[in-house]
Length: 434
Ligand SMILES: O=C(O)[C@H](O)COP(=O)(O)O
Picture 1 (cartoon, rainbow, N blue to C red):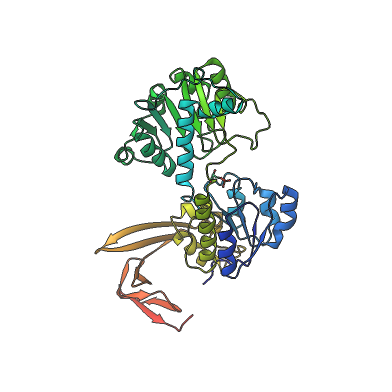
Picture 2 (cartoon, rainbow, N blue to C red):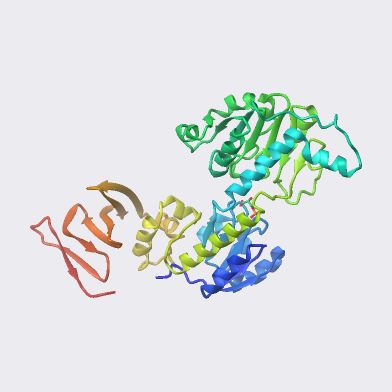
């Protein structure tokens, strides 16, 4: 069964052609329009069920609210900070991304900037093109034996670490989620930021941009660093405070910066870009043929899988994330479908449930070497518990409110449950296929 019907998709940025091909092969009509103004997008968006973007299209609440038919926003890439995910979630629109497609490309660009910073390669290239042969000015330093601090030890941070270790760098890091023993297994010792700052010769950031990471490197943290520390940002503009970076560059506290991203893109204020110790790129982290092919293919396949009810992969919509999959949301959709709430679906189910006082808890357990799922729903002060599993590809019910079925009950067709007053056993009647 289709989760949502997707018939027309707008691709508003330069996404690999395989995205369009895959969508079309699956019966979806595709329109490609690049560099639309916000007004043009608002005027057009009502004609589409789906929108595919990269980072340049700002999918604000105005755009989302104008998309009266919009059901899915697909981000061919990782960062969804250009999409108002809360506004989309409230309107029941699924937001999904392709989080792994550009990992290697972003990591490789980070390494290239680290190497360029250590040997002043871009500056030397410019000087050569200027007709010069300046062998003194571009004296560098080896990466070998230096300390690289990696803030954010997710997919990209890990790939940067293992590559730079091959240059003989010591890699230390910080991440609030990745367990220290996990990062230790790929050679990164974790520590607090307070301990990390003073040890680093180079710092690279690989976090999303959110309140806790905005201005992570600021005047106070630069002051705790070694004099001449070099920094790289291939993640999001603003993680390194741009004004603080400029001050640190001017005082010599920061010896150089490699920037692929900016708070404003393209940056109108070119003071950082023009600084002699800054090397910069126009947000090229994911701009490789390979990364674009992966992201284009992944987002198209994810949209098709969602539209055909096969799978929901890469959803970042807030309610889906919190529900650890479909289960809580699906249960609430079932409960609310007959109620007064308008259009409950997998995306808006949990906010709607919260409004009506329904609470849902899920748990996964291994029982008799079989994975089971426990669902507890509380409505108007009464609690209901169901334990289910999937056997040979068929979802089955094992227990209801503490009573165990003699046989697993396949969850197909219409089922009527009743309980004899003097029995603890649940009885089941199958009343035809639904
Ligand atoms: O978040 C991302 O995936 C990267 O920053 C790349 O963005 P882009 O798809 O706009 O190049």
